[in-house]
Length: 127
Image (cartoon, rainbow, N blue to C red; front, top):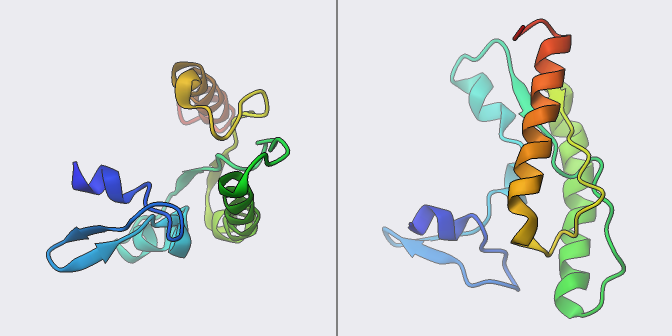
Protein backbone atom coordinates (compact mmCIF):
# COMPACT_ATOMS: atom_id res chain seq x y z
CA UNK A 1 0.00 0.00 0.00
CA UNK A 2 2.88 2.39 0.71
CA UNK A 3 4.22 2.02 -2.83
CA UNK A 4 0.84 3.01 -4.21
CA UNK A 5 0.79 6.02 -1.90
CA UNK A 6 4.29 7.03 -3.01
CA UNK A 7 3.16 7.05 -6.63
CA UNK A 8 1.02 10.11 -5.96
CA UNK A 9 3.37 12.04 -3.66
CA UNK A 10 4.28 15.18 -5.54
CA UNK A 11 6.51 17.54 -3.54
CA UNK A 12 4.74 20.74 -2.63
CA UNK A 13 1.33 19.12 -3.03
CA UNK A 14 1.36 15.77 -1.23
CA UNK A 15 3.59 14.65 1.62
CA UNK A 16 6.29 12.11 0.64
CA UNK A 17 5.94 8.59 2.03
CA UNK A 18 8.65 7.31 4.37
CA UNK A 19 9.67 3.66 3.96
CA UNK A 20 12.85 2.19 5.49
CA UNK A 21 14.12 5.66 6.43
CA UNK A 22 13.75 6.87 2.83
CA UNK A 23 11.36 9.55 1.60
CA UNK A 24 9.59 8.47 -1.58
CA UNK A 25 7.96 10.78 -4.09
CA UNK A 26 6.35 10.23 -7.46
CA UNK A 27 8.82 8.66 -9.91
CA UNK A 28 7.69 10.97 -12.68
CA UNK A 29 9.99 13.59 -11.23
CA UNK A 30 12.95 11.54 -12.43
CA UNK A 31 11.69 9.30 -15.24
CA UNK A 32 7.94 9.12 -15.76
CA UNK A 33 8.30 6.58 -18.58
CA UNK A 34 10.89 4.25 -17.02
CA UNK A 35 12.61 2.98 -20.16
CA UNK A 36 16.23 3.13 -18.95
CA UNK A 37 15.67 0.56 -16.15
CA UNK A 38 14.27 -1.84 -18.76
CA UNK A 39 17.30 -1.34 -20.96
CA UNK A 40 19.56 -1.84 -17.93
CA UNK A 41 17.75 -5.15 -17.27
CA UNK A 42 18.48 -6.27 -20.84
CA UNK A 43 15.11 -5.64 -22.52
CA UNK A 44 15.53 -5.59 -26.28
CA UNK A 45 11.95 -4.64 -27.23
CA UNK A 46 10.10 -1.92 -25.35
CA UNK A 47 6.44 -0.97 -25.52
CA UNK A 48 5.64 2.25 -23.69
CA UNK A 49 2.52 4.27 -22.99
CA UNK A 50 2.31 8.06 -23.16
CA UNK A 51 -0.68 9.24 -21.11
CA UNK A 52 0.13 12.92 -21.62
CA UNK A 53 0.53 13.10 -25.39
CA UNK A 54 -3.07 13.68 -26.37
CA UNK A 55 -4.35 14.98 -23.06
CA UNK A 56 -5.95 18.41 -23.14
CA UNK A 57 -5.70 20.46 -20.00
CA UNK A 58 -8.51 22.69 -18.86
CA UNK A 59 -7.77 26.18 -17.58
CA UNK A 60 -6.41 25.92 -14.01
CA UNK A 61 -8.94 27.09 -11.44
CA UNK A 62 -6.81 27.10 -8.28
CA UNK A 63 -3.21 26.97 -7.10
CA UNK A 64 -3.16 23.15 -6.97
CA UNK A 65 -4.24 22.97 -10.61
CA UNK A 66 -1.60 25.58 -11.54
CA UNK A 67 1.07 23.40 -9.89
CA UNK A 68 -0.22 20.29 -11.67
CA UNK A 69 -0.18 22.18 -15.00
CA UNK A 70 3.45 23.16 -14.36
CA UNK A 71 4.33 19.51 -13.69
CA UNK A 72 2.44 18.49 -16.83
CA UNK A 73 4.45 20.84 -19.05
CA UNK A 74 7.74 19.49 -17.70
CA UNK A 75 6.53 15.88 -17.95
CA UNK A 76 5.32 16.31 -21.51
CA UNK A 77 8.81 17.39 -22.59
CA UNK A 78 10.51 14.60 -20.64
CA UNK A 79 8.07 12.02 -22.00
CA UNK A 80 8.86 12.98 -25.60
CA UNK A 81 12.56 12.44 -24.96
CA UNK A 82 12.11 9.23 -22.96
CA UNK A 83 9.74 7.52 -25.40
CA UNK A 84 12.06 8.04 -28.38
CA UNK A 85 13.73 4.79 -27.32
CA UNK A 86 10.48 2.79 -27.42
CA UNK A 87 9.91 0.22 -30.13
CA UNK A 88 6.15 0.81 -29.89
CA UNK A 89 4.57 3.89 -28.35
CA UNK A 90 0.92 3.72 -27.32
CA UNK A 91 -0.75 7.15 -27.02
CA UNK A 92 -4.43 6.83 -26.10
CA UNK A 93 -6.59 9.87 -26.81
CA UNK A 94 -7.57 11.05 -23.34
CA UNK A 95 -8.55 14.54 -24.48
CA UNK A 96 -12.21 14.14 -23.40
CA UNK A 97 -11.11 13.64 -19.79
CA UNK A 98 -10.09 16.05 -17.06
CA UNK A 99 -6.72 15.38 -15.43
CA UNK A 100 -8.21 15.95 -11.98
CA UNK A 101 -11.34 13.78 -12.35
CA UNK A 102 -10.67 10.15 -11.45
CA UNK A 103 -14.34 9.15 -11.56
CA UNK A 104 -13.98 8.14 -15.23
CA UNK A 105 -11.19 5.60 -14.61
CA UNK A 106 -13.10 2.71 -16.23
CA UNK A 107 -13.61 4.72 -19.43
CA UNK A 108 -9.94 5.72 -19.49
CA UNK A 109 -8.83 2.11 -19.01
CA UNK A 110 -11.08 0.99 -21.87
CA UNK A 111 -9.69 3.65 -24.22
CA UNK A 112 -6.15 2.62 -23.26
CA UNK A 113 -6.97 -1.04 -23.85
CA UNK A 114 -8.45 -0.35 -27.29
CA UNK A 115 -5.50 1.84 -28.34
CA UNK A 116 -3.00 -0.78 -27.12
CA UNK A 117 -4.86 -3.49 -29.03
CA UNK A 118 -4.86 -1.33 -32.19
CA UNK A 119 -1.16 -0.47 -31.95
CA UNK A 120 -0.10 -4.03 -31.17
CA UNK A 121 -2.22 -5.28 -34.08
CA UNK A 122 -0.66 -2.73 -36.46
CA UNK A 123 2.77 -3.90 -35.39
CA UNK A 124 1.77 -7.56 -35.75
CA UNK A 125 2.36 -8.25 -32.04
CA UNK A 126 -1.21 -9.57 -31.60
CA UNK A 127 -3.67 -10.83 -34.21
